[in-house]
Image (cartoon, rainbow, N blue to C red; front, top):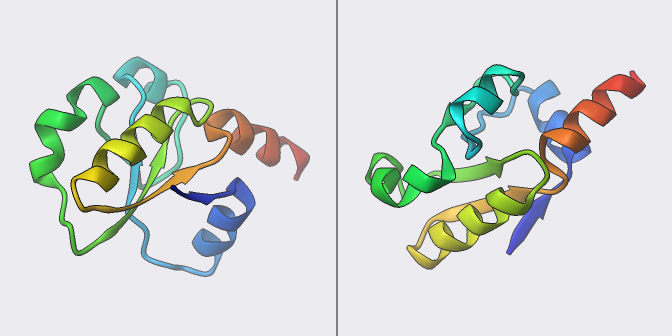
Length: 100
């Protein structure tokens, strides 16, 4: 499974890379805070909404701590998608943001 750290993702964003970010948390969790530009597809709906995704595009999956996005990464990878799990999830993202 491919992984990316929050620092690596932040670097890509600062450099203006076009990224496809999927947050697999529940809607209420996303409303509490999220990375700008994400698409929210809760993990429980991912199997039913994967037809909305393009196998030609790479995706970075995000959740609260990295567990659910890891499950989502495995699911989509098994279906032939180019996916990467963000290690540590939003907890790591917010922790990193607090350091600035």
